[in-house]
Amino acid sequence: MQYLLLIYDAEKIWTDMPEAERGKMFHEYMTYTEDIKAAGQLLAGNALQPVHTATTVRVRDGKTTVTDGPFAETREQLGGFYLVEAKDLDEATKLAARIPSARIGSIEIRPIMTFDS
Amino acid sequence: MTDAAPGAENEAPIDAAIDVAIDAAIDAVFRRERARVLATTIRAAHGDFDLAEEAVQDAFTAALARWPVEGVPDEPRGWLIAVARHKAIDAIRRRIKLRAIVADAPDDISASPDAGALALPDDRVRLIYTCCHPALAREAQIALTLRTLGGLTTDEIARAFLTSPVTMAQRLVRAKSKIKAAGIPYEVPEPSQLAERTGAVMAVVYLIFNEGYAATAGDAWIRRDLCREAIRLGRLVAELTRDPEAIGLCALMLLHDARRDARTDAHGDLVLLEDQDRSRWDRAQIDEALAWVPIALRGGPGPYSLQAAIAALHAQAARAADTDWPQIAALFDALLARQPSPIVALNRAVAIAMWRGPAAGLPLVDALAGELADYHLWHAARADLLRRLGRHAEAAAAYHAALARAGSEPERRFLAKRLAEARASDGESG
Image (cartoon, rainbow over all chains, first blue to last red; front, side):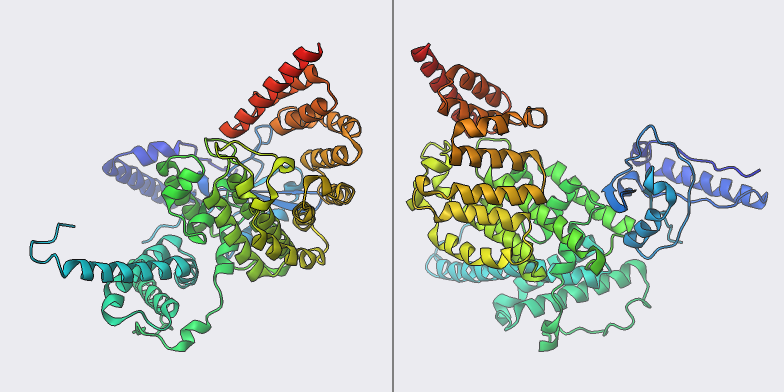
């Protein structure tokens, strides 16, 4: 079996956290990632940029609308995901608009966080 | 600043006056050129707004230090762009140490650039479309446009939209952070999206104008600085896009703004169009706009151009009684067909009432009750027609309803006055 583990927490907890504690959490994340990688159980994983960078795409009557924010309605449930490569948000929007569910639901675009090593 | 020492009194004021004059000249250059310099620097900074703003600030600081000594360069914009680009590229090199990205840039960009630097494309076009990108919230689009293209300070924008400087600063930081993190491109949209994206830009400019033309809250009904800024931005959009609707929008804003001195009286109370002293309208501005209207109308014509044509008919009437209401009603028909909205329908109903009498307009206004029951101007329009029909008790009730929903103080004072009049008339007749 394969499983998707979704991480939910309040961004405010992270921003309010003392630097040392945040560093400790990051370190724990790195250890955890290394552990499950070594166990052959990691398929993919990423941190997301904060929610204020989210964009929602919907297609209705053949017309693509783009709005700021994670505007999924509460009656919509997370049904799947694609991790894609695109040169900018406009290209990502085009990919999102081609997902069939864009016509009946909404596609939330969240940029992936990259870490300078 | 300390006071001049005794004995230096005779020379210091002269030096100070020269310094002030040079500072004022430099300040004028900054105000005029900031948006263009910033727009090009953002491109050099690979779309990083913060880095570019710092680089532009550094370039202006360098100019303040050097120009009073060396003289203002022949091409101040080219000088500023060259210095800001140099600073931006330097910062990129320092910050991410990715020399490869900027390897093709010359190592030493001279601070006195050749004329080639001036042949740069006008990057303000990119800047406009990026600031008004649909992935940014409308409030963020407005704030970013005023800050980067309009050259208003964060405090000035906060004051204009009645929020605190802290809130406005956060809004700008978040918007810039989203542009960077989400990868909003610093590009002119591709042709298939250009019309829609230009529409979004015009909507932002018109919202800025409308907040200035009839503030939704606060003590002052008209905020002239915002109107002026919107017109400046509108001219820029028209010049850069050459879209007939952008020309129509410019004409529309110029025509509305031309009435600014007649729209309020000495007490800051509002004066209706039909009661305005038309000799106080800005004729030069009206004439400029009237020349633009036919050009705008050749393009389709779109909603802004049609509204400009309506405003032009008002501007051309020497007295309120001379207004060509049948023509205005016909233009509202065309506008309603292109932009079906209850607000447009309300304006059309009022035009028909002015043309055929209040009895003809009232049923059209009443038909919009379902959609506009919370809009103070729907109640005010209804009240006015009832007043004209001599139905004072109903007029009073409608003025009361309008008053309960009005935002700005001058509007409230106007409605309160009309309410009192309607009650008095009702007392006389009843």
